[in-house]
Image (tube, rainbow, N blue to C red; front, side, top):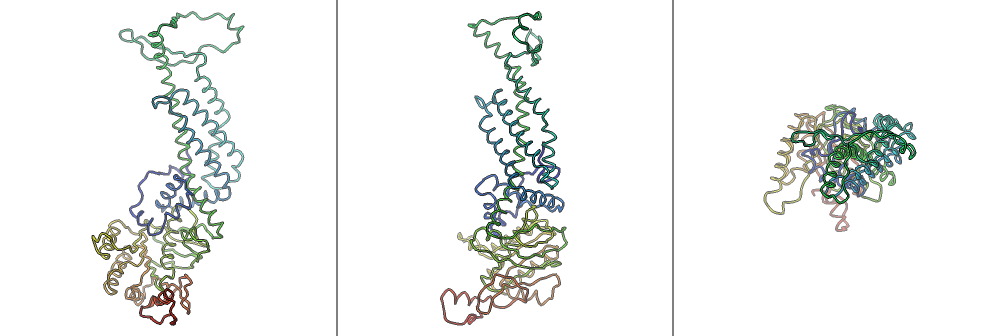
Length: 504
C-alpha cells in the first residue's frame, strides 16, 4: 500500500538533503516563523514543512497535483485530521507494544500489534466508505479508493483467522527430517491436522496412529529440548509476522509524513483565516517564462507574528528579469523582498500563497544574499564576507534561478559598491537568472535606469508628503535620497520639517 500524496508514483523523501541555499533562505526569509506556524509545536510537522518548502519542485503537473489535494484538505479538514490521527496512533502504539524481552519481538507482541493495526485499518476503511464522494483531487480519491479495494471484509476475515491460528491454542505441529548424524533438519511449521470437534466427537473419533513421546514434568533437559524445537518452528512465524508488521508500519509512517505536509498547510491556513488575511492558489508558469505578477502579496511570516493586518503589494513584473527596489528607509522594502521569496517557495512546494492573486514562473533554485552583521571575531571585513558569500552562490547557481539581494555591497563606498553590484547583476542576467535587488546604491540603481533596460522594473517604497510610510511599493525612477532625515526627526522628535536633511 502506498499513499502517493506528494507525488503520483513515488514516496516523499524526508531524508533527502536540503539545497545548499537552505540555511541562508531560512535566515533571510525568516522561514522558522513559517515552519512554526505550520507545526504548532509538533516536531514531525516542523520537519516535514521545512523539507517540503525548501525542496521545491519545478514540475508544474506535480505542483497542481498537490494544490488539488490541499484544496480537498481545506474543504474536508476534519476528515484529513482524522486520517492523520489514525496514522499517528498506529505508530505510537507500535512503539509501546512491539518489543519483547531482550529487545526481540515476541510472537504474542507481534500478534498484538498486528491486531491493533487491523483495528486502525478498519477505521480508515470506514472513513473511505463514508467520505470518498466528498473528495475531488486525484491523490485523495486514489488513496481512499485503494483503502476500499485492498481492505475488504474478506481481507479482514482472513487476517483474523490467521491471527487466531497463530496463537497455537492446540499446540504446535512441526515436521522435520533426519540429517547427517541423525540431527533434525528442515524444520517446518505445519497447520494442525483435522477439524475442530465437540467433546463427544473427540471421544468416539478414531485417532490416527502416531509414535508419541511424552516428556516427564521433572525432565528439565527434555523440556528444554522440546522448547527449542518449538522455538525453531515459531521463529519462522515470528519472521513472517515481523515482515507483515513492518510493511504496514511503513505505510502508516509514509502516510503520516505525507499527510503532515497538508496538516501543516491547514494549520497555517486556519491561522491566517482567523486574522482575516487572504490566500490564493498561485498559477505556476514554466521555467524561463519570466512571469511575476501579484495583487495583495504580503509577508506571511510578518502576518502570523503581528496582531494587526499587514500591507500587501500589487506588482506586474511579467517579462522582467530584474527588479530594483529603492526608496525611503523603513518603507517596507526588505519585507516586500521577503514576501517574494516566501511566495516563490510556497508556490513551488504546492501550497497556497499569501496574496489575492499570484502568478510566477518556477525557478530551478532560489538563493538570497542579504546584508549581515559585522563579524564579531574580526576575521574578515564586511565587504570581504559579502564577496565570499557571493562567490559561493555563483559556484552553485544555475540558469532559470532567482537571486534576492538585500542591500548587498553597501559595506564600501557608493562608487565601488555600485560598480560591484552592476557587474554582478549584468553577469547574472546574461545567464538567464532573475534578480530582485533592494538597494540604497543610487549610482547602481540610477545607472541601470538610464540604460532603459526593457527587462527591468523599478519600484520605490512609497512615502507620503508628511514623511509617513505606506509600506507600498510603487513604480518609479530611483531617487538619490532615502529620506533618512525622516527617521532622525522621528527618533529625536525635532520640530524641523520632514526632509530638511535631504542629503542623508
